[in-house]
Amino acid sequence: MFNIEEELKKLPNKPGVYVMRDKENNIIYVGKAVSLKNRVRQYFRKNNRTARIEKMVSLIDHFEYIVVDNEAEALILECNLIKKNRPKFNVLLKDDKTYPYIKIDIASDYPGIFITRRIIKDGSKYFGPYANPGAAKEMVNFIKEKYKIRQCKTLKERTRACLNYHINKCFAPCMGYITKEEYRKQMDEIIDLLEGKTEKLLKELEIQMNEASKKLDFEKAAYIRDKIQAIERVSERQKVSNISENNIDVIGIAKSELEVCVEIFFVRGSKMVGREHYFYAELKDMEDKEIVSGFIKQYYLENPNLPNKIMIREEMEDKEAIEEWLSTMLGKKVEIKTPKKGEKLRFVEMAENNAKVTLENKEKDKSQVLLELKEILKLDKLPRKIETYDISNISGQYMVAGMCVMQDGIIKRNLSRRLKIKTVFEQDDPRCMEEVIIRRLKHSIENPKGGFGELPDVIFADGGITQIRAVQRAIKKVKDDFRDGEKNHLLKDKEEAIEEVLQKIEIPVFGMVKNDKHQTRALLDENRKELKVSQDLMNLITKFQDTVHDTAITYHRKLRDREITKSTLDDITGIGEIKKRELLKHFGSVEKIKQANVKELVKVKGINQEIAKRIVKILQMKK
Image 1: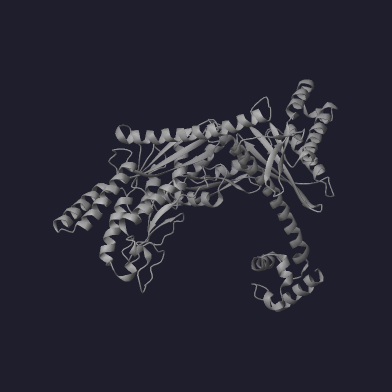
Image 2: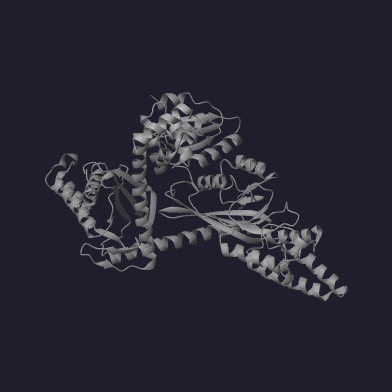
């Protein structure tokens, strides 16, 4: 058995990474330390622990650690472990948006320019990210129009030029109508434009225009003049500050009672070329510098578009280690700056103000949803916590329920629960719903700090009036139990506590009904009345219903597949876990294994002629 106090005494006074695990051996936190001995011990001393750390420590069953040579090595290992395991108490990039980049395949003789959302180490140059996909598309279209570079994805030799050449939109490198050097000169201009080096570019173009005019090549001069005017317009739209830095990222933070927003600006040559924002729930008690440190380590782990400088508000404890790590990745020095005055400080403040506005707008959207629900459902208070349930089975087999939670207008997938049906042994969805609701309500009453958390303000049942009635019966049964005193031994001050529990269990119930095409149609009340809601709210309810349905059916399939696999392959002598895994990996399902012959089976790793014949014989009998 792991004795935490004894293991703390064994910690070395060396740099390394520590991993906290819960009873199920899940990794719940990964951290790095200059001294493992000092750092890990801090968690188990009760001085000035935040609520978040308090909760984390209460879940720690055991820990482990890896000793390294220096802090930089510890940082890299920490980043990789966080990325792989995504521990619940680390700062995690939960924003699932993939922003577009502009890509130039500079290794090609005649490079092309494309929009991509996937960055790979293929020798290409990437610019961005662009938080607005339309801005990236607009920039690429502008470049293709003004520079007449190739439009095709792959360059192939042709017997005649394509339409783009004839409408004056391409110089036809496929036909050799432009030299590699002339084409490369164009690409250099495009790269300067994307990097924000427009002043230098405009000066060079002006010289070219004047030279063309002197040579009486007025067509070329007009072409360059139009290009200059277009670049000036693009440059003006991008300009955000007279800051003198050429290649910086600026990070700002804003906090609310519910979450944190991190805003990052990408500034190249005094011009904004992109921005992103990320939201983190329940980190309001974490220090800003800790949030920023966690964000930087994750964000730049595999991002090749590294800046020369990162500007933040406060100094971080591991600043030097992060600078060393980023500099190694970039191949030249990367600095993390905390400006105290002047234009650079104002730029950080601008990022913070934008983070605040972004967060406020999100809060307004959530508040609007809650206010609309309160009004439509005729509730006395805002429905901050809504739970929904769905039942899944096939002819009464592998019966399960899915539960999902909407907290403050946001669907919280991490709060989803999956439950096996225990007391119903035939197909009867309403009785299954009744059982699940009774178990769920009693769980929170008997264990308020348990995994289900507080009781919901509202319950949405996946279905119509039948499911609404089932949930209402469950609520009534739980209330009757407490009125009859069956569970009163759990309560200290019985009369007041019973009344308080009865009041909490008085939960409004509504149904989510679908149309003939299995699409969410409406919210339904206990009188079978369909409630009118806005399109935005209907979209959210639809997503809520789809989420709980997916939760239930995924669990049902998992149990069904596990049982099918167990009842067939596990009965065959010579088939252990490894061979079973290889068979399923090769064929995809037990059904396809049943259809396979000996010749096909022996292609699987670990399956010889004898075992293959045995598989065919036994599975044929079970068809």
